[in-house]
Length: 345
Ligand SMILES: *Cc1c(COP(=O)(O)O)cnc(C)c1O
Image 1 (cartoon, helix red, strand yellow):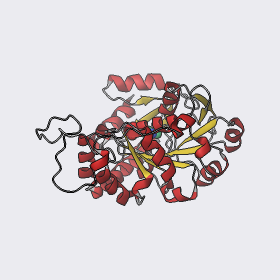
Image 2 (image 1 turned 90 degrees about the vertical axis):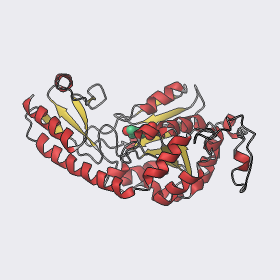
Image 3 (image 1 turned 45 degrees about the horizontal axis):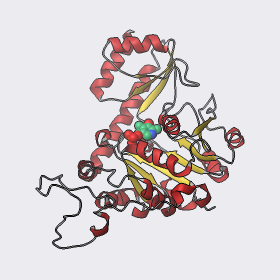
Image 4 (image 1 turned 60 degrees about the vertical axis):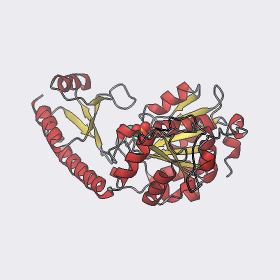
């Protein structure tokens, strides 16, 4: 399967903007840069950042075991998702397929780009993709299928065989959003990128890695897809401070691993306690750092928690999520306060 026919014609013929710094980044020695109208007085950030983020990408390449040519970085994975829509979807003509209840940005980004959205709800029972319905709903203009696994807000993984079926049968690009993969027992799809030319995997430093503030998202795909995304992206989309901080913090991977195991332990403890709260009607299995629960009256419980200074996410208006609340796992002390409060509502 070649993906060339899926790319928007405008994008295919696009010549990328060549930034001043692109052409000389490999050159060693004492170069004097008088090409980009920067202020020459050094304060650490007076120069434009590396447009290809070479140093950061080599760190990520090692960490993820994915070659640099298969990686694109974005200002959060939200930018990556936006670039993907702009690469494949012709405004007012093409569509994307999403599986509610799911991450809200797919719909927002499609709307911003005037791209139609086809919705096929997850199964009511286990929040799994309904393969046959999805494939039937898709048409010749369906360019992207967004799969969020582990899914936000439900917290579950999609079955491997279901995802595999969709990648093999959907006639467009399948994006697997792995924002929560580091909390999951399932393996990342990164190891299978080579097998599927239409597979794109996105991850982020915003959740498990503890760097939501620097905005760094990752896109992993074929060389062909990454090269085209590179043509579309803004030349300096990842700022210097972000690149520096990411390199610094990624150096301490054992800390992140430790924090993940703490959060999973805390999650298991929270699930146990929630089981004994009388107005909690269901606790959905979670492979992420949050739990979705069904309560007697989501609006009421949400407000009660707000009144005690605890902010959670009310998901009751989402399809299949009537009276559901989403709780992020916090620190031990934060979870203790949450539990104390939940038990006395
Ligand atoms: C939080 C989240 C993201 C994160 O996006 P960033 O822009 O990288 O912070 C992406 N996808 C899902 C499903 C999320 O929940």
